[in-house]
Image 1 (cartoon, rainbow, N blue to C red):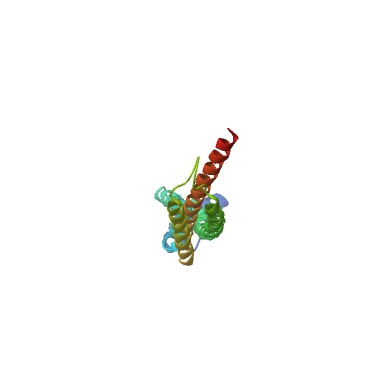
Image 2: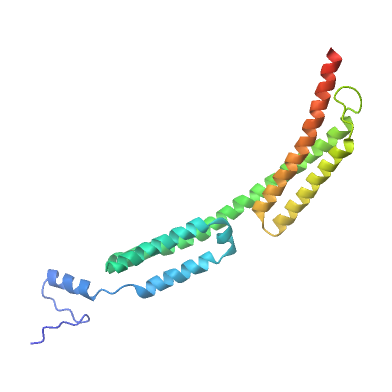
Length: 200
C-alpha cells in the first residue's frame, strides 16, 4: 500500500491528519509577493506620491517586508493572509498623495491671495509715508523696490501653480506677503513716531 499521499488527493482520514497534510502542502505566496512588489514600485514611481506620500509608500514596503519575514519563517498561510494589507497600503499612498496635493493647492492659493492683499495695503500706504520731520522715510524708492520684489514673488508663485509646484508656490506667496507687510510696518512705525512727536 502506497503511504505517500499527494497534495491533490487528500483522503478523509480525520481532521487532524488532513490539517497536517494541508499545512505540509502549503507553498510560499511567491507570485502574490511579486505582484505586491510590482504594485509598490508603480506607486512609488508616481510623481504625486514622490512629492506628497512617500511615507505612506514606505508603510506598504514595511508591510511587504513583514510578509517576507513570515515566509522566511515558513508561515505561509499567515503571509498570504497579510498580503491584502500590502495592497491596501499601496492604494492608501495614492489616496494620501491626492489629498495632500489638493491641500497644497489650496494652501498655495491662500498664500497668493494673502500676498496680493498685503501688496495692495503696502501700495496704499506708500503715498502717506512721512517725508519730513520726526520718523521721516527719506528713501521711498527702497519701499517701492520691496513692493516690486513682492510682486515678482507673486508672479513666481503663480507660475509654480501652473506647474503644480504647490509647495513652492505657497513658499513664494508667503515670502511676498512678508516683504509687503514689512513695507506697511515701516510706514506705520514712521507715522506713529511722527504723531508721538507732535504730542510733545
